[in-house]
Amino acid sequence: MTTIFQKIINREVEAAIIYEDKNNIAFLDAFPFEPGHVLVIPKKAHKTIFDMSESEFLDLQRVIFKVANKIRKTTQKDVVIIQRNGEDAGQEIPHVHFHIIPRYISEKEKPLFSDDNSVLISKDESKKFKDMFSFDKNVIE
Image (cartoon, rainbow, N blue to C red; front, top):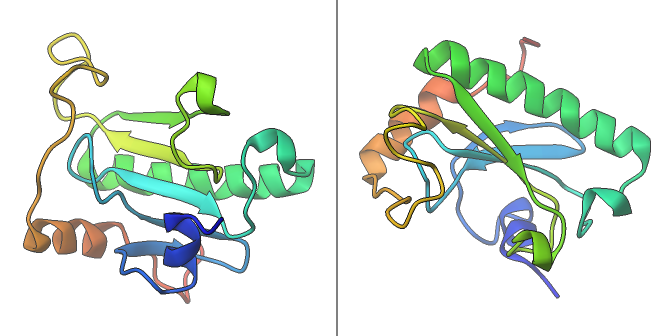
């Protein structure tokens, strides 16, 4: 089964890609919990982290750290990093993915997993975040 993530990797579906290397890719979530919500995924399809080799997992963690740090520095906001493994854990797409979500409203004021948890952002706002978060391909941060 081809997932939406595999279609993004194959450029069959458009996405605001902010980071890419030979093994991993990061892009803005199409249905964000907060503006600037990013997904980081391995290019190789694995349903859960337990299907990955240790080296693949550690390589993905390196990218998550890099992207989360860029989001935190750019937005000056704390971030939430979430990942689920399997249907019972709430995983909806059977491809490993990590959410990096900048928090503009504190968890005390508006829990991330509330009934009103997604936001609508315009294409212009999405482009702004893509531009802010994108990595220069010639610079390793």
